[in-house]
Length: 105
Image (tube, rainbow, N blue to C red; front, side, top):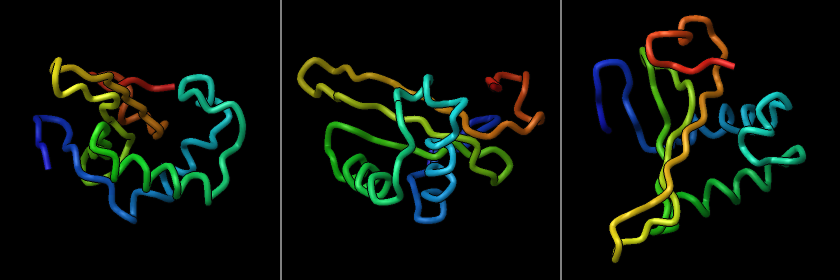
């Protein structure tokens, strides 16, 4: 776990998967996630499995006050050149996360 002043980054758990599945299928977030069509549970499970076992990717759940509000990760990790691509997705719309450094839809 990585803890900061406002958030904690935790490894993805089985409890996080259904929530992330809901977010990936939100129509209003599709253009932000690169998902063009609804994702099946099977496809989502396969994606989670691929991301969590790929040495060139790392995915974390973003927690605020013990509630998962989104995900953050790195992909295309290039160990030789010491770089990677960062991605962040805030799925929760709760007004408590608006302002104060959190992005809201």
